[in-house]
Image 1 (spheres, rainbow, N blue to C red):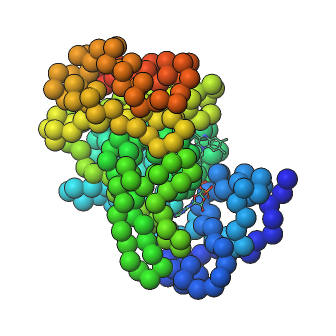
Image 2 (image 1 turned 180 degrees about the vertical axis):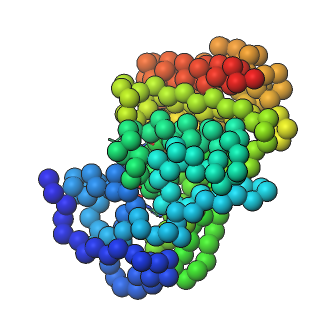
Length: 284
Ligand SMILES: Cc1cc2nc3c(=O)[nH]c(=O)nc-3n(C[C@H](O)[C@H](O)[C@H](O)COP(=O)(O)OP(=O)(O)OC[C@H]3O[C@@H](n4cnc5c(N)ncnc54)[C@H](O)[C@@H]3O)c2cc1C
């Protein structure tokens, strides 16, 4: 199948993008890397009357760091992060920078990563997507910008509302992702089961522990909807370490978070949690 006809505009600035979003009755879709939208158009699951291409907007490709957070522009590609953009902006290869680079390097394969963007992934909201899981675990927020200049920060835990459904409102666009800064003591584990390299996860788990900031979060991905936090497991990790988490507590947590899953997917989810926790232990 081929895409239905649509008008195409290559945005030359945020101002022009905002103007186009504000005016007209077009059903507008933004296009970043086109890696998810392209198939959606061809299958006619998306039928916009107008596409606005934001892939050339330098304003959306910036990364900058403050004392409290890293702000990653919406159109930063997976490949850019894989190649060290975060460490460059921090001036150091911190655990957080290494985590982001490693998550990026595991998305699909290089040709997809060269074009696919962090905001495109979050806006598409595939339940098995890597950024959805990693950024939820890191307690990141999504900067949703309105054409009139307004901007609101939506925590990842509220942004993804279900499979392919987000809190983004009509005519809003993502301008950046805000990732809290973690200390040098931060550790993490990230494990996903894929049938073969370059495919979406069938089960995935991300764990982040920062003892200095008293932060621990354990999140399950690839559940068919938004990722699910496992707060009991996170509490044990924070208080007694990943080694103290019992297999029985993992089974119970997965059972509660993945009620609709069949037995094999629950077993894969539990194994993903165990392996992500083992990585955290090894990172001591
Ligand atoms: C073969 C293949 C394998 C893949 N494997 C994986 C994988 O293992 N893990 C994984 O996580 N992903 C995977 N992906 C998806 C990939 O990461 C895509 O890059 C990503 O999902 C979409 O990013 P994009 O920049 O291409 O967005 P696009 O395809 O351009 O857009 C996707 C959606 O986001 C919207 N959008 C884009 N930018 C914005 C913005 N700034 N504000 C608001 N809405 C916006 C678009 O309107 C559209 O609805 C795979 C893709 C392919 C083709």
